[in-house]
Length: 460
Image (cartoon, rainbow, N blue to C red):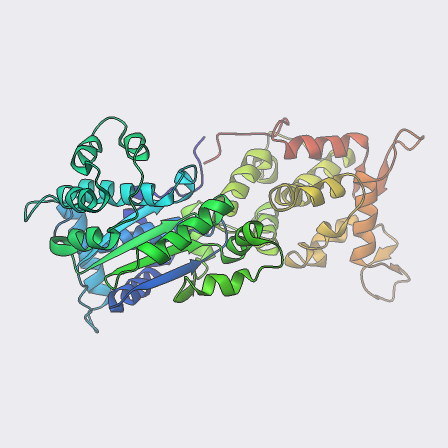
């Protein structure tokens, strides 16, 4: 059983870029054009929700920048040629020549246990440059950094730099403090032969401990300001503001505080949902179950990571019995009640478990039927005709039938599933072509848990 989530591996970054799998290539191109136009110190906040694909986006941008840097050593020449070729093709009418930029990726969440963020940030820069770029010209950048830091701190940094190549370099680096001096000179020395500018992509800051997030922002502002450096913070601005308030207090103006650090705020555009569905092999909405799943995704505003998780769970939970499988017989009324629940209610339940567990609890405990209404418009009243008795209709038809609302039928079916106490003499509740009993609710909850008879982990 494979994961649906598109991990930011080099292979995925490359293939998604070359095939424009989620229709974000033009966003990457425009973002790189912004980076290419910057000629002074600049900090950019790339804003997007959790799971919206920020990490994937900035790593693709880094991949394109690296392909245009002749000093890069980690990528195969054929891959770099494809990347540069696609860039040239996209800009054949308006050629854009990229300046040579050294790019570094820093995961702040992985390092928020460090006493001082400068330690791990410098370490990440050193590691990235040492592993990604060749040093055939000029002096060794590590030696330059060692000489500068040794001169200003009085410590034997040359020995420390040698230890960086040992088995546990970060642990060695943590033993030494006083790195804050001469950061500017160190970064300038790094750029002497490697590129015109340095781009540092700082990811996951909004997930860090409040004290670390604040310290990292203020250290960069104070020590890392340099006209040849661009910082890109891929963050969820709303969550980062909450993080700042946890540190400074709930009445603190976190938005104004962040304005001190971010020169530009750029919102990550949404991915093309249809293209993303295709990449997940979810592109044939001919079945009601899939239509309901699609509507749940849109109604609950799922980001890319949530979509991947949701589709994986719904396919495991009830794919076979909702897609014309002959394995299950739903011809009897009691069984048809289960079938309706699988097709319509289970996708809603799984969506609630992902986006709002408390609301899911209210739903299955008979306190809130409103989720049933939130996806009904995508199907229309026709799908729900089978809930009507012979004397009921959704609209006036002159045949003497009682006009009922879809809302009232949802209340009935909800009560039958999650409210009615079947221990008090009620054996079942009949509605139109369906009947529901105590085992119906149990089946739906068990199906949502992925431990029912319908569970299948072999679905591609």
